[in-house]
Length: 84
Image (cartoon, rainbow, N blue to C red; front, side):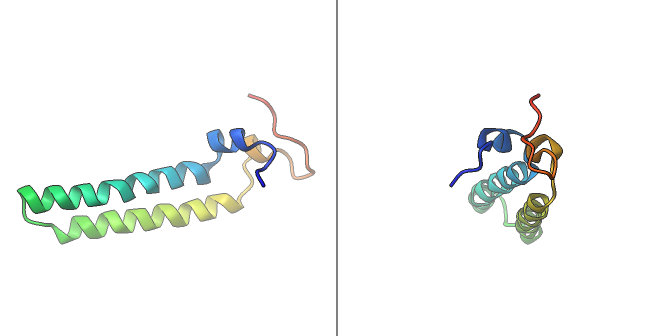
């Protein structure tokens, strides 16, 4: 079941933003590997860095998900978030 303000969550939640960034790195990693294998020698450090960044972004998204974000969550007493 979706939360009542799912559109607002998609626009403003840091967890969603960080997961989108992690997704970008997940998509870029095989593209980089293909280009590196085709044109230049593979660089293990760049592959490790991209994997590490993806993992760190995923962990940051999990941490961001548990913190209250006033623009998304509203007050802790159950009030809906403010518009704008």
